[in-house]
Length: 538
Image (cartoon, rainbow, N blue to C red; front, side):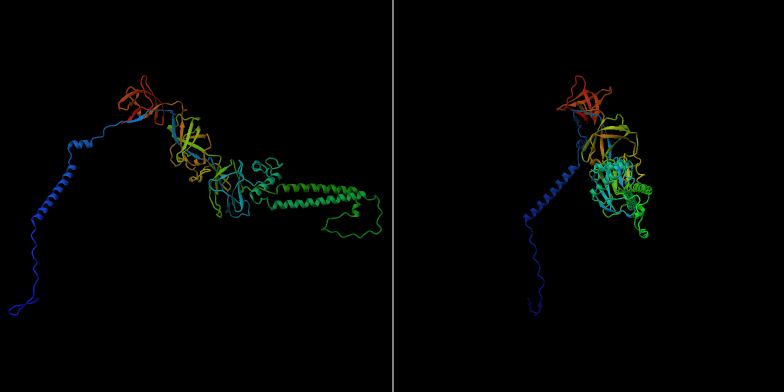
């Protein structure tokens, strides 16, 4: 809005001046004062509480730092059978492990490949079972103490032939009239029946021996024809007239036919009887000689068992502990590992534990991971050694089989014999063997005879061994060893605590100790019963 002054001057309007705030009332001032006072009082209270937590009187500090009041540790008196014992460790392992290294059965096999697998780790192998096929060659197990070290074929003799005959007889294939330990026609027939039962072709001695048989047979056939012809001539001469008239017109002579057996002619029939007899005797002698040659050739020809096909084991069934290959893979070294004959357990006592442990003492074996318990007896306590308890490894087949028979057991893979596979140890060591590192402390090996065969699940396990040094008797009064007190006079006692907390000393005589417990007998006139509480510590 423009204002015009009397001098006709125009005055522009300026900014408006704000009005002053109203003065606070008395009530507002009083509220603000009260709020400030309350805030100050709260701060003072908080500070006082904090200071009170930091400031302690000497009495309070002493009470807080003083030890807690003493209390008694007690244990009950019990009545039980107490058997002295010694606890140690033991290892379970197979006494013998067999490593199977396949070989070629003939020169025709130039490379070895797994063509079939019949088993896997943990399988149980029985007599006559097919284990594998390598480059078309079967590998089967038979019971026998002597490993296969040669091909068994017609004409072979010896104890290995006898174990083959026994093994086949156990499978229902008898050897007929063959002598024990002599590979004859009956054994050959049994071998043929066994291979046919496996569904495999029957191996034979080969083309060389068969050719010898064929050649000898042809000679025998020729000899028999000669004998027959001479015999016919002799009979014809005996039936003809003594002085027959000469023919009027004899036929012209015929040229000889070298490709045809000579036939008796009228002229030959008229040979003197003495000449025919001599020829017939000579022909029969030749026939006998050729028949003998045929028999010799036939005796070494026919079905055979190559050493590469058979795995003789002293005890069957056996357990497969490792299979190192798959179908189609090349074979290099050990293909299969097996164990047979059960499991062995050896305990390990430190020298201080061996005192009082003697053969015949009862023992208890405990596999803590499975809870399996087996009882047995101490068979023998050996001399101190640092060598780990192991079995033997016997290599069957391969170039090193002959030199490996006495090697320490090793390479046992994985199975718990017949059961779950176990971890495979290093060569020369049985799975689970304690004290197997170099520099191991000396121990005394304890041979254990189990009351029952050890289960396969214990194979390779490090188990707890408890040797019971005395037979369990009647229950006795027992307290913890810590409850026994001995005074300067050498007298022993225990401190009994009644339900009200009152303590009394009970003189006792100590007896046998075991597992941290001791048998006690109260002195005459004193009483100590099962269920009483005795002091074992403070």
